[in-house]
Image (cartoon, rainbow, N blue to C red; front, side, top):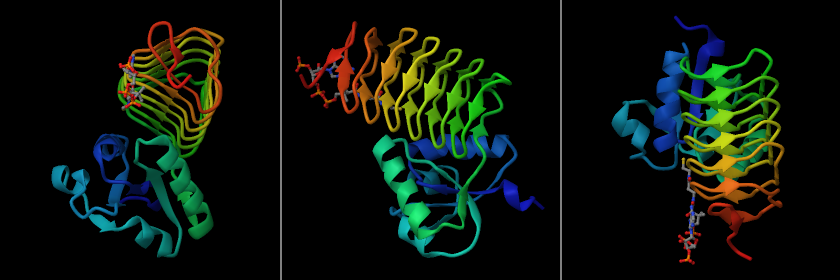
Length: 214
Ligand SMILES: CC(C)(COP(=O)(O)OP(=O)(O)OC[C@H]1O[C@@H](n2cnc3c(N)ncnc32)[C@H](O)[C@@H]1OP(=O)(O)O)[C@@H](O)C(=O)NCCC(=O)NCCS
């Protein structure tokens, strides 16, 4: 038998959900199942998790439940969380889910529903807000602040005291030098090296990073 607080439902059954489902099992959770609008979502095919219904089915159900959003896209994550708060207030994001092979400093803070993937490092006094993703091998140096629903893609790295705004994506392998401020709903392209602050909603690419849409 599993204590109820370790029972977890996943919102989203695509590629990111595969990683979270396996990490959740390794971290001692029981994955009750997942909700996805697609009956043939990857999670059902690959790890034989139970599809409990569509996302609307989740919102229309009643009762307390512990969930984690398992969709990598930052704006979709934020919109879904908004719908859950309004539509099913008894549902609660799980405590941050940390893969057993991730390294999180004792002084770091992790918000509810955040996910820290294998090989990721979250260093001293960093703070990771609710529902953020620190993906495989990402490095978050000391005193960084990562906003709600932000996604640090695999192998990305933040130098010390960087802040990343809400629902911003830091792409695969991107690097950010220390003390930089990145706004909300921004996008850092894969492989970029960010050496200047990035405004809200901006997309930057390259080495050094430049505005894509300027
Ligand atoms: C930045 C990004 C969103 C741009 O995508 P897009 O809007 O489809 O842009 P395009 O592919 O049309 O490229 C537009 C221009 O930017 C350049 N460009 C795009 N991505 C780039 C990158 N990562 N680095 C350098 N240049 C890049 C293209 O070469 C192109 O240049 P050109 O106009 O001189 O030909 C995308 O390439 C990217 O890097 N996404 C991050 C993906 C990621 O890491 N996801 C995490 C998964 S876990």
